[in-house]
Amino acid sequence: MLDRDNIQKYKKALDRCQITYLPAERIETFGMTYFNYYMMTELREKYTRFREGTIVFHKPLVILAGRTREMFNGFPDAVREYAEKLLDKNDTHFHLLGYRFQNSLRETWEERCHLYERAAELRKSAAGGTNAGIIIGEEEYWELAAFKYLIKLIEQSFSINVTEMKERGLFGNGTPSSITKEIDKLFSEASSSADKRQELGKFLLAHNLFETYEDRYFSLFKK
Image 1: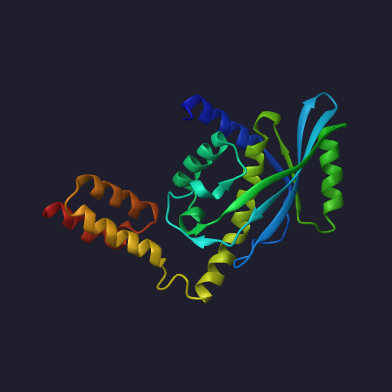
Image 2 (image 1 turned 120 degrees about the vertical axis):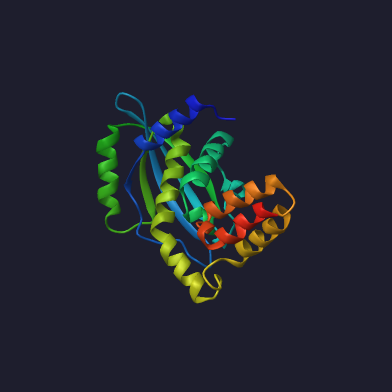
């Protein structure tokens, strides 16, 4: 389990990560998408470690909030734990679509070069069009930088993915059917369980549906 100090360290490291080039390509709504990346971390003066890898996005799915553990393949446990806490608390993109991804590191090498000058060179060469992102991270937390990269990819793809899913009727009347079923199940269980009532309230808040079910929810406390 991550303690408060480690959570703060991860947060600060994530803030310091830089995505100097983000591919314009979007995540496919109904198929797999491959995004490459070049990761640079400074080892010592004028020495830079390069990592070349690929993040594979599988077809997004309608998913329930808080069930993100199975998404983080190819990330260490500490990074996955921090990401789950962060996303469950803040990121509504993951509350609607189950983005599933695999981070695969292909190659690592070192060069005697100035990190930011080399990053600028790579960014200039990428301007012609490539699906490889350019990332500046920290050696100890390089996986966090990869996580930040995939979040940026999701942010620029989310609205298109949702629109295309709606066009195929996957969201019904606006709320995914899987969420509606879970809500009905929780209401049934909450009628005789205080713990389930609390779980139901948190679930409705997580999905921005509390006002929709407010009267029905409070009626549970009158029984």
